Length: 350
Image (cartoon, rainbow, N blue to C red; front, top):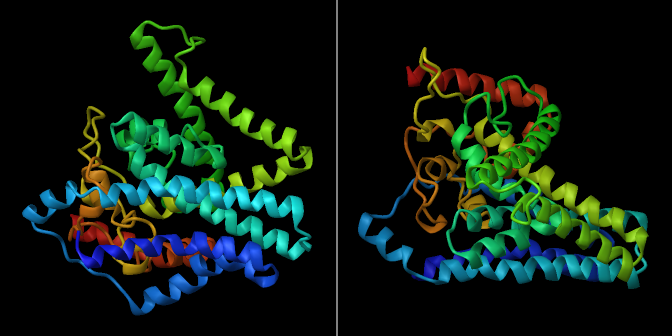
């Protein structure tokens, strides 16, 4: 590890801002939202892309440094501290409607970034502990099925019509949210049914992970109802929906309009770096643990975040992730910018 790697501690800033905001009240409750979708997009105008990569020797060394793993693991405690303090404030605080909206939105941002984003990285790891941490991070977003469908479904079918997480050219993000959310959930059930069938195990077996996910998530909501009251359950659902809507918005910008070529026999070409939109903007890379170098992640899914590469042939987003997410919420603007960029890239590809 070198001193520059300490930059990943900056990834804790939104969580600390959410905690401080809930404590301070007032407009401060919106702190995490403001950082994610106001301050970061502005900073990324001045701190643009960095296409530098590590050498093979450096990559080999960085793979073995445990600091990068511990950074991910610590997010489990961070996430539950934020969610726990949110419910504490709902119980003992006296929030106005505006403060309640701000706190809920900020916690939703943490669910989507600290929760689902870090779970995405850990979900690609092979150890039982890291898989367990991934599920813990997905629980407050009620999206425990994500890792199963993402690893076995999305990575297999990305950039094809079979993948619900690949946005089609001209598809509005609001329609995509519905299609992708349902497609991911139903796809996870199908994948689990196939897995059990191959093992010769009944769908209603105790080995069915999807059934366990539903039980655990219902137990989570029920525990909130029992210990805090049923009136708190809608808030738990609200921060969950906010969390996975952020995920689906990221999915939207990561693969918008990109499709793999298909042979006459129906076989798709191998996933390549040019099947994902990339962003080398520095601030987003740090706060999202290099998720924005998404092309390399799909090219080699087992590559840990600290050595993800800039790949020249991958298409580049015009803005960093937060800025692109905001732009996607205005479909005419998104289509105007991205359809031209998509057409230009396809001409270069040919």
